[in-house]
Length: 212
Image (cartoon, rainbow, N blue to C red; front, side, top):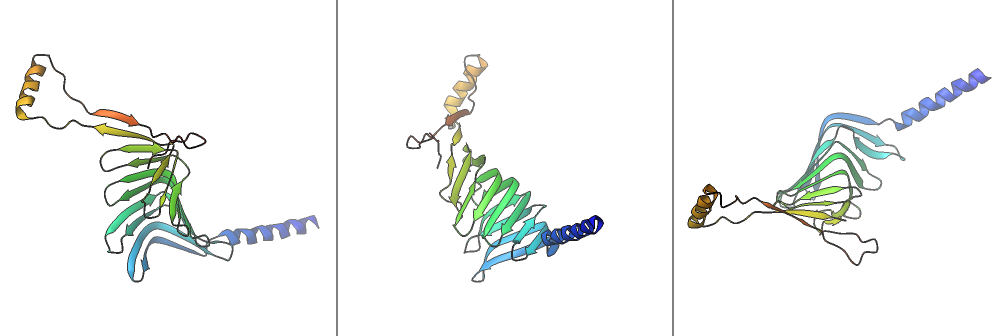
């Protein structure tokens, strides 16, 4: 009887394992997402696993993905890359992990290790450390961030910003004088100044520092 019970359990375990296996696996997969015949998103991935059962309606990208986002005009809006990703079709929720990098059309860059895109709510966010680099060189780091799904109204929570200040070029006469002073040992070369700026939110109960 015991031997029969073990065999029965092995059958059950095999059945459970097959339930968690993907229904479809594709390699070097590329797809386009459109709305009213307008291209919204292009995605490529080395490997996609698709689950289509009633309980598991999701797509997994275990080897990462590369996504291009487009404006309604067809112009490129931004790019997203990650080492791993998953799309939950029931909740309409994207999750990306591992070296997540988001670059917008203006050259701004957002970096984090975990990223969520809630398409139903129209927001993107991360609950862990995030670095935001502006095209002008401003670098801001926060413990988390939230934004609209078009990456506007970005807010870094408990954020700290570093701005690189570079002096404007001087007139040729002043430059010549500075060079003479340096030759005589009376002057010092100008170097970029690094300024840390912390924005304090005094209305927050936990004294968070948010940067918008």
